[in-house]
Image (cartoon, rainbow, N blue to C red):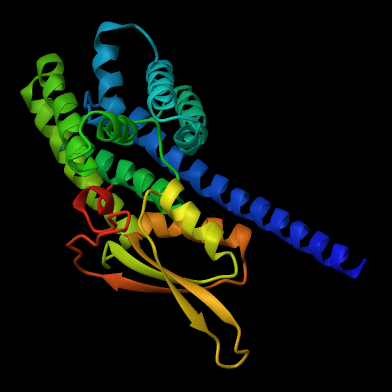
Length: 310
């Protein structure tokens, strides 16, 4: 009877922790969506600008179709979701589904407001602010372990099914470059160059949000009673290699396993969230990593450029 009560208490504690985490995530993601929607509706569109990603694709289509930007974005997000589901599966679809619904809805709300940030048309200033606002959005959603139905999802599909030997960061760069170059034929070369400025500022801002001025890579050492579940999650859900050690606590003399692997700061947030659900009492240390190279036979190749930079 006592054991059943303990189990019930643990389940209730996990349920409350999940609700708390989701509430925090929702508030942060909703705020991030508001920042990005404001950037698009109140800065980018009034100044005739465009950008990379599916935002840029939607801007190109908007030139030829008399449809609200939010509707076009919804349609493109649906296409990306379908691609992810067909080529990768439900596991990856779940990661981008939430923002694919929330962000276009917030866009629609902002379209109903007739507000512009700049008093007069200033393309350069608008390009800078678009990059900063969009970078805040990207940085916040990645920091919380989420993703959007954008070119990053398409890049992942291409890396897994078409060109696995190429890093995802390079594929994403090519996709964004194609969108920006295409916008030059629709909006002119100058607008495309302003879009390039926006993209550079977006990248730098998102990196500062996610990593601060610290290293982008970290090494996680995890001591947990759920080592088997965690190693499975790391290898199957995150596509990372993991090394385990048999250790013993000298105070209790109990044998345990320690997991070690390398990942990005964004992925470490995903690990933290999952670990808090299955073993809130786990002991974790995080070490900054400046550089990684090489290959260890028999692992899931944690050190390649393709895996580390995705």
